[in-house]
Structure formats: C-alpha cells, structure tokens
Image 1 (spheres, chains in turn red, green):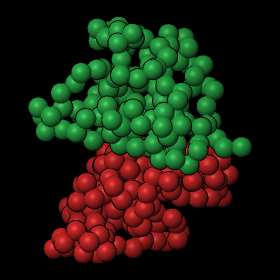
Image 2 (image 1 turned 90 degrees about the vertical axis):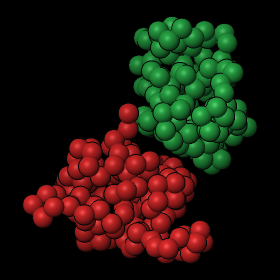
Image 3 (image 1 turned 45 degrees about the horizontal axis):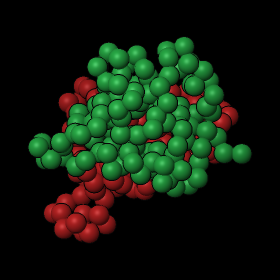
Length: 130
Length: 119
C-alpha cells in the first residue's frame, strides 16, 4: 500500500515521534511512502540546529537519518518554513539572511506537493493536527 | 477521479498562523481543481464572525482569504451549529455562505470524503 504522511506538530510533540515510528513500520511492513510532508510547526523537525542532551532522543536527527537511509521524499512547506526561520542556502541568500539551517535530504516546496501526495497514495496519514 | 478532501478548521482566527495555514491548504487544493470541502468546528467557527478588527492587534484580515475560497472553486463550506450556538454566534450573520450542520450530520460529512485533514 502507498502512504502519504503529513506532520503538523513541533519535534518535541509526541505525535512527531509517533509519526517516525509509524513511517518505520510502514516500510518494515513492505509498504511504500510516496512522500512525507512537513507543515506548520513540523517544519522545525527539518532544522539542522536543534541540540538534544546526549541521553535524549534527537528526533530531528532520527528523521534525517530515516529519510536519507530510505531515500524518501521529505518535503517541507516553504511558506511555513520561511515564517518560522527554517531556510535552505538558496532562501537565506534570497532574503539576505546570515545563515541557513535546512540541508539535504529535506526539500522546500509548496502545498501542491501535499495534495499531489494525497492523491497518489492509498492513504493519507496525519500526525499532530488539532 | 480525484479524491475528495475534507479540511476541518478548529483554530480561532487569531491564535497563531494555524487558521490561515489551514485555509492555505484549501486554496492550494482549489487551485488544482481538487474537490475540497471545509468544516468550521470548535473555535474555528470564530473565523466566520463578521466585523473583526485584526489591525488592532497588528494582524492581517483573514476574511479576505476566506472570501477567496469560492474564487478558487472551494464552495462546499460547512459549520457545526452546536459550536456556533455555544459561542453565541448566529448562522445568519457570518462572513461566508456556510451550511450549518447538526452533530449527527457531521459524521455523515466525514464519511462522504476520501481524505480528512484536521488543523
């Protein structure tokens, strides 16, 4: 089965950890993830700047490894990300910001990617909505 | 055939960017000609209240985004009547032509759609 997964809550929200465990289970079960879409406060998951204590789960890092290892399509909503200070090099340059905090495997794109994934997939699973 | 999406808006208009960002999902879907419906639920019904003065708190008027919905082909607009009643709002005086639904009809609305996003 093809899954599209959308995340809406910040990295420290329980739903963001559950989303990762769900995504792992999807692949372990032999299913496919057509796209991960990070919207609203979930854009912070894609930031390379959060620092966790050594004995605590570093969720942004765990997501980054998971997406990289499985070569998944990890899309971060560009409007939501810019608003919250999550920028890649290109956007930092465009808006004359001194630094950036979004790197591969993450990709900035628009809400059309959420709709496209939801249409493509057999199931859209959302984490962290109200 | 395109899958239908029901977007459930539960956030009050000035509680942060959430309300506007939920509407943006609807507008983006409308731009792709996808079948989108909106349900205003819980504090989300406050988005429909007329004569708001967001400039007083340095916010942009959400009404303009709401009124763009029909222009983007998003015309299936619903509101939970119980939530209007609880907040002292009247279905007759809202900024958009929304269909008020009783609680029993909400479950049917969810069942009618292929996809649901709640924000």
